[in-house]
Amino acid sequence: MDINYQQILTEIFAETKSLKGRGKVANYIPALAGVDPNRYGIAIQTLNGETFQVGDAMTPFSIQSISKVFTLAWVFREVGEKLWSRVGREPSGTAFNSLIQLETENGIPRNPFVNAGAMVVTDFLVSCSKSPLTDILDFVRTLSNNPNINFNETVAESERETGFRNAALINLMKSFGNIENDVNAVLDVYFHQCSLMMNSLDLARAFLFLANCGVNPWNNERILTASQAKRVKALMQVCGLYDDSGEFAFTVGLPGKSGVGGGIVAVIPNLLSICVWSPELNQHGTSLIGMKALELFTTKTVISIF
Ligand code: GLN
Image (tube, rainbow, N blue to C red; front, side):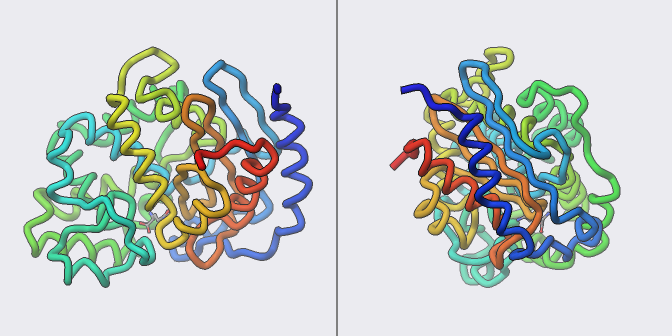
């Protein structure tokens, strides 16, 4: 049976609007605090080339932690299994910026999506690349098939000025010998990757290589082996939403990645990728409407990986 995605998006949009006002826009990064809480968009990109969208799907927003999937894919391709000697593959059950486990676990972060783990991945990137910012920007532009994507220097600078927890996490890891490069050099790249501005359609497109067994559908370039793509999706499933990952698996049932800018991207292997953006967050830093919209999406389409 053919699924009418446009009709489903329109229904979801109407059914979730009443949740506006229930969450809170992230304000611990001052430059994010001014985002209009009423923005709301959803975009779908299918592997057979169709796109569907509703609301503010073409408005760029700060992708924040969604960028951790891009750096992970770049570094995984470059260094392979070596990655796992310095970062784990288990859910943390803690907030994305928690320091608690890091000391008792000797500076090895639980997974590549908590901030500490993402900074280890970025440290690999800095070690492997002569110009990490250019490389990651080119990578994201190619994956999304949009050459106009850029960093937001105001957001990056705002996070650098206030990123005391991230500085604490990276310095603690440095003390355990798990950061190779200068901590400020790694933080600078990390804050820039988080500041990337993309719209919902860009993000749905940029994650399509994961639905496509690791091959970028825009130019047929293999980014990851099928097995590596499987692993990245598995990590998204178990830790892509930090201490909300169990709830996301339970209610949505897809591998996903959230960011405190209010975006969530989810992948349906061999079929499509979907991105929802709504800036108001729940207490775990997940877009409140985004999570509900994706729950409705898998319920209405009756497609999930479970
Ligand atoms: N840049 C943010 C931080 O490091 C990313 C957090 C997120 O999106 N979950 O705190």
